[in-house]
Image (cartoon, rainbow, N blue to C red; front, top):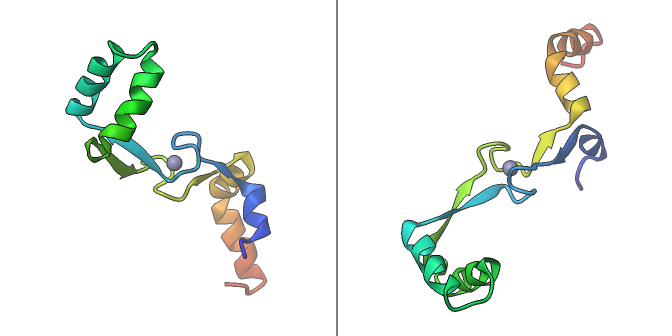
Length: 97
Ligand SMILES: [Zn+2]
């Protein structure tokens, strides 16, 4: 089970929308989208059709923001990171680490 506490300190990565990876499209993919755009009413439609037709032109890359963690520290998580020396001191004081 996921540690409940983590949810208090983390939030979904906005860069990859919580997927942990981002899609990388080849040059050929964009050319195909341009081509399909002439055949379909909207660019979005052309894009979706291209995704379906040319999956081999789409690569997945580990999200550079969250390193594939799917989450990022929120403001409380950031506060912990910024105060890590005090937190370590605290844990050492009570012989927890
Ligand atoms: Zn991410």
